[in-house]
Length: 65
Image (cartoon, rainbow, N blue to C red; front, side, top):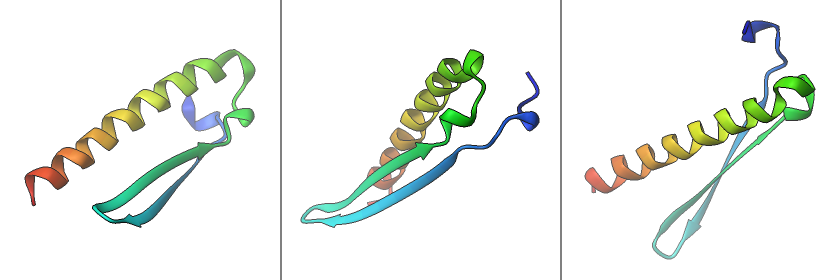
């Protein structure tokens, strides 16, 4: 699939201080601009990717404490 022809999504990071560190919230929008026949697949792929990246960030922060 040629992803360059697809509308990009918007990824926003919200960082909120907490008593024990920082809460990281990732919000991705714009899936409604992806063609209907690919939307569910794109959402699934992006969700899995962000879950993996957030685990990588957590692992990095724990290891560098």
